[in-house]
Amino acid sequence: MQRINRWPSFLSLTVLIAGLAIPSLAISPGSVSAQDVVPRSPTTVPRVFFDCRGRECDNTYYRTEINWVAWVRDRRDANVHVIMTSQNTGAGGREYQLDFLGRGVYQDYETRSLYQSLPTDTQRERLDGVALTLGLGLATFATESGYRNVVQLAGLAPVGEVNANLDTRPAGILSPGDVEDPWKLWVFRVRASGQLNTESKQESRELRTSLNASRVTPTWKQSYNANYRNNRQEFDLNDGSRFVDNRYDWGFFARVVYSVAEHWSIGVRSNVGRNTRNNQSLWGQFNPAIEYSFFPYQEATRRSMTAFYEIGPVYRRYFEETLLGKEEELRAEQALTLQFSQRQPWGNASIRLTGSAYLHDLKQNNVSLRGNLSFRIMRGLDLNVGASYSRIRDQVFLAGGDLTDAERLLELQTQQTDSRASLNFGFSYQFGSIFNNVVNNRFPRGGGGGNF
Image 1 (tube, rainbow, N blue to C red):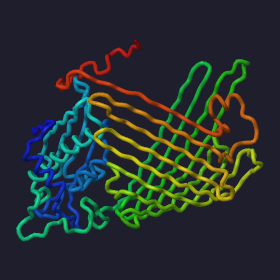
Image 2: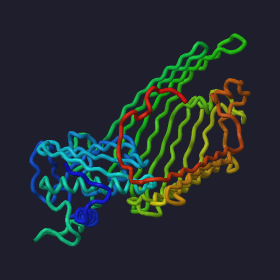
Image 3: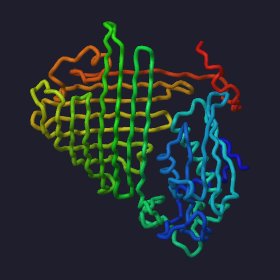
């Protein structure tokens, strides 16, 4: 078995960096089945299924950093199946184990790579370390399995061939014509969950279901989601009566985005549904939108700064007459969101500023600011801060009657307020040996399950 430690060999590192910098490849219009022999052609790249549950399973990050393979959603379509697991080390770091399992004609291929992070590493440093180990393992598989010209030394190209970097399409991007896909890049997800809690004097039941359909290409991004939620709560009150609240909500959400240019996108966001907490028996909106990215979208996993503007009509039909005397209304509103996020070796930072207002009365508006910071002050010392503030002037949906005590305590209805604020902060400091990288799985949670 192959073992890759925290610091890979200089030769392997050089080969990987070269492969990331100048991936001499192009995806052919034809497809390659996992059961067929892969042609020895510079137009063939490995198809990878990444199977990960738990820490640092950031598929978007790895797909962005390793764009010289074809990532697939089902292991049956893959040439190599990568399984990543992790566990704590004695020093407080984490050991990541990546198993590379060949499929189809490569079913005899099996190897393993290990990466160990330090307890003082930031999320970005852990992701970079895992990405490096994953990339080295995939480069080794490609080389040993006969995929030619996937990984090359910088500046070298096969004799008599043109370097694939001249291809105008971004590396790693597949179009529907590149593979035989009966689903045409559509992905569907169905979810359902239920929960039942009972005690002698109270009971609660909840059911949730959702259906999602999405399709992503270099030009278009579509996402459609439908959901349903039913919640029932029963309590025995001190006066001997029993409080019962049974409600259901549903919603359908759609988002369609078109890539206009490197920094511009346009699209439509629409919603329709029922929201009992906000006194809306039926509500819907249809908002055309435009977004500008100050950085190229390809850099979004590391840094992102966008301005998003939407405008459109909103219809609401209410369960109860509102404070403004409305049983239903159709209004036009607009919203502008500025958002910045960054992932660096020193930590992570994000900030989001949103302002919205009704067009018929700009005084009915909402302004909110939210930020999060995870900052490494010094080796082993991390500071985490999160804060949010909203100035609220747009609660046109509030019911006119007074809320009962049960509705207030259980937060079954939205209450009138002028503002909301929250603050959370903390720090962590770890010191001592960083060399205890031994893994011991005995009594992982202490056993017994007792509280002390």
